[in-house]
Length: 263
Length: 233
Image 1 (tube, rainbow over the protein chains, first blue to last red):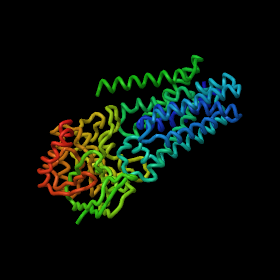
Image 2: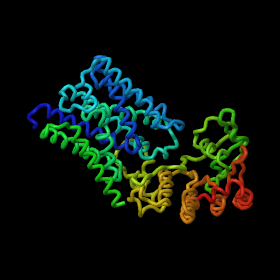
Image 3: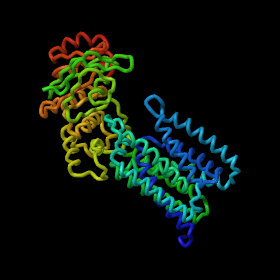
Image 4: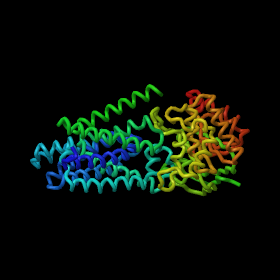
């Protein structure tokens, strides 16, 4: 299986994406940002469609759209507006625009399904370098802000003295989610962002009790799903995203069941 | 010596005057109940103490190095993953290291001990009882070793036994460590057993009194707006 360069690329990409998704996912789940993350992937779809329409790489369009939207959502969410409603409004607008750009750009169906469902087996070496660079950026920024981020995600109410650092960390976090959504959708597609960013961290919550262990287990679960999914896809010729989704959902259901049984 | 001293102190939001001409003097190491109807200016006053209220006038002196604040609402679901000790450590957010260093461990252990949480430090906070959760919230505020501790209705959601238990522990902190306590509450009768004095926010004014006067306040206020709150819980 590893004699094919496309499988090598897919495994490397899958590994990078799983590590980023596990780390980001830990904070996303803790802060109840699952819906926002999903919406960002829909916004990413619009960005990618615009990218293809404008003749840019889809990933670039996606990154610009998701980063812009995440900052907008961060600015609009406040004590007066409900975060989910703001997110719905922005993502509805984005999907509408995405459909428009797909039509205007006469984009091929293959490109469109690639964005929506992922195309991990079509990742090239050049894509890989870009992915590595983005992953390093996201992980470095998150780890440098680890302390503030930890408090923001796990106990925002406890932050009563908001200094500039804590205010800015909210936006930094949103942009990092946006970038990881863009990265992850290369693998599982924008429709299945939940699978890698949210589910492994949501499952890990039931087995671990410290932030570091939670991140570690989320990475392990994401890696397991990705590697197993790629192998099964290779053996059966069925879509990778399908297998990753099934594996992560099964792990999640088992974790909830075990927690409820023991708690 | 006073830890909080105001002279002709006022707070307003735009045109609305929340507090005016307040002359308050809270000595170090006392336990003060902060009383008043919802919207009477208790929270605005606390915000001013921690430097978050901009529209203030007059003189405000806060002689505390660090202030610990225990907020009123916190959503901790059953599947909240962190242990009690990890939760208490969240407030320790200096530096950027991923690990818990020795001085941090020490501070966390100390806060757990002060709130009688050592035996459940490895329990998941989501699965802890209401009383244990409240104690963990206070412990988190204690991690930074404050000299002024403000509690915002920390007993409101507890049953009588746990209300008394929490107040006893807080009272002990005050007595043994000379920690100043501001306890925002509607439960006048309960707090009157523990407080040395009170600040009452009413009709845009703040008045201050001794513990001995709390009893007469109880009869004056219990049958107006306080009664609901007491029986609600």
